[in-house]
Image (cartoon, rainbow, N blue to C red; front, top):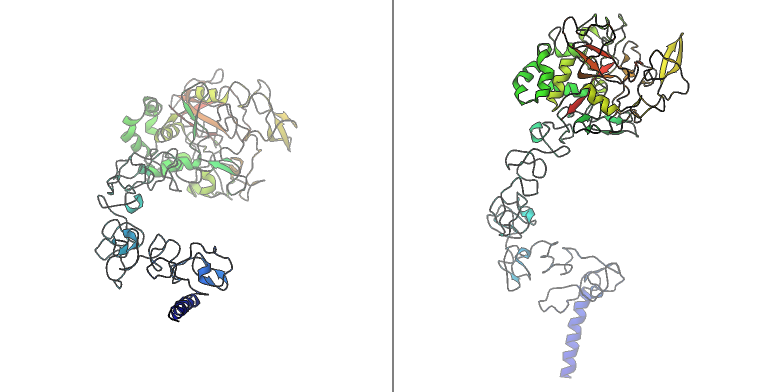
Length: 565
């Protein structure tokens, strides 16, 4: 009977233990420490069960094995104690089982048990001691929400450190510009900022201000620009095919430069936009002459040679008549008799419907009434810019104004940048009828005639680009004929340069080549400069050999492009 009674007592105790955990808890697996634990040989989470001992988690709820949690009253998952310890549960109080120091609230694990009082307060990041999983006093680790540790404090992993660098000696390293992580005040990995000795950041890297970037240009998206003139979105990041806001748009930086075939010189992929010129004028507050005098020693000799003879014509504020920057880039004709009285720049108003198209926005200066916003115009190719200001812009942007020879080399030997065919065309008024005409390229002694077979999709030439289609309510503002650079993907040369055939002619730094019998020099400014082989949105012929005008001539069908050595 003694043995039987002992067996009955043992069975009764076991039965009570199982009953207590049969639906919501676990049977105590044989760990020898009396803590209810999961059954390593039990069923997986979600399997059917009748009691906790049936499950790996030790928890049977509603007839199914439940996943471990840190509040289920069972030691399971990676816990070292009862709902504590391990990487997922809170730290354990004194007396609870542990494997490593970070399992314990006290931060100490001795002989498999956490030291300290079982009722000790939980570790915090402000208690003045190194506890929980902190790697130094009140810093590092993840369980007390402590901040990262400063230089020379203890660490276990990189994330314990402010610098994100934990040395082999388990000390947080000071931030440096060569440690392959972004730290200190760097704006990207090992670049930007001022405190780590890092260099300035390359294009596309993160930045907070212009000085973080090698280009001296931090754009609207807090990325370093290709050059300092492409920091704004409109006219800086809107070049390429498709209109802004359209699903098919494929836009990129307007400041990309590509090698000229057979040359080490790079030429801007796109014509200069009005927005890029605005970035220049705003950065120097209109004081272009002051900028040049203060910085010319840093410019290349070629860039200085392009500017120096004409520097007295540079603007030095925004609105002084007639050389203020807004007048030079707006509707004012600085040389009203050459080549014409209007030059296609002045935009009129309801009382004076003078047709014009300057793309640099100047508000209502000269009583102009524009149909389009500054943002819209900033995206368009710049026009109505005199030569000295164009040369100064290119120098500020890290290059110099292109030569005719460089532009022609990029254009290539054909009638168009893509060769001789297909033949490009556009539209014009012939005897009062709007007619498709061409060819766009120059043919000696031949004008334009109806050309139904000419390809009107190749280049922006002869009114074949209109945005909005058909014009606008203010029909004196012709800028809707002028496309942002890159909108005609087929107008591309062998080197990848865009719009060499169309939108508008371009200023160059090469001497003019005049008409037979024309004076070699301008009567006021002396030098004449040669314009590129491009045609214009108004129908000027592509590949014309002798475009030239005085250095202060502005024209609504002429823009610019920079070269970079």
